[in-house]
Structures are given as structure tokens and as C-alpha cells.
Length: 96
Image (cartoon, rainbow, N blue to C red; front, side, top):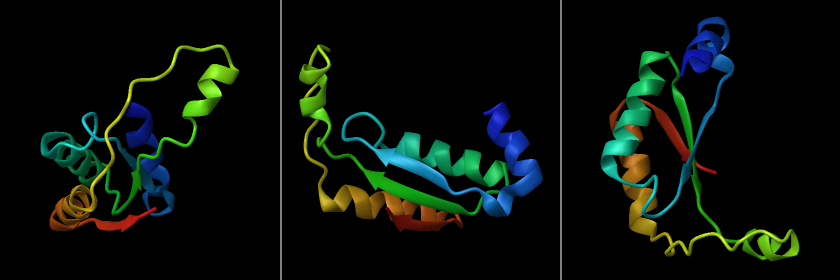
């Protein structure tokens, strides 16, 4: 957070805050509102929501790593709710 604040102090118009939306981990309203608050406190005005996708799961086995937890599918309403929350906080929010 300190690093983000320092970067924003010298170039807030050049920073696009990307928010990964992972069902059951980062998609709850409290977390999203906290991110919106951090963005606003740093003077950032743009947020890009990045929906979770399981495309990299196969690589874990290839690398000899344990399989990551199964994450439920992200429903369109969750994405819409996140965008609405960010926009309601005065941020320009778009889908990645």
C-alpha cells in the first residue's frame, strides 16, 4: 500500500488498478469496497476488473506442483455488481 501511494503521488493518471475477481476469495462487497477506498485515497480513478479463469490449472501438474483449489465459476451478476460498486465510488471501472 505504501508503494502504491508513492507511485500515485507522482503519476496517478498513469496507474490502472487491476482487480482480479476470484469467486469466494476477492468478490465480496467488503473487499471490493476496500479496494475502491484505497484507490480513491491514492487519487486513482481507473479500475479494471479481471474475472478469474482456470486456464492455468493444467500447468501445476506439469510443474510438479500440487493442484490449486477448485474455484467456482464466476457468474455475470458478480462482475456486474463489482463494476457497479466501483462506479458508485466514483471510479471509472471496466471489464478486462
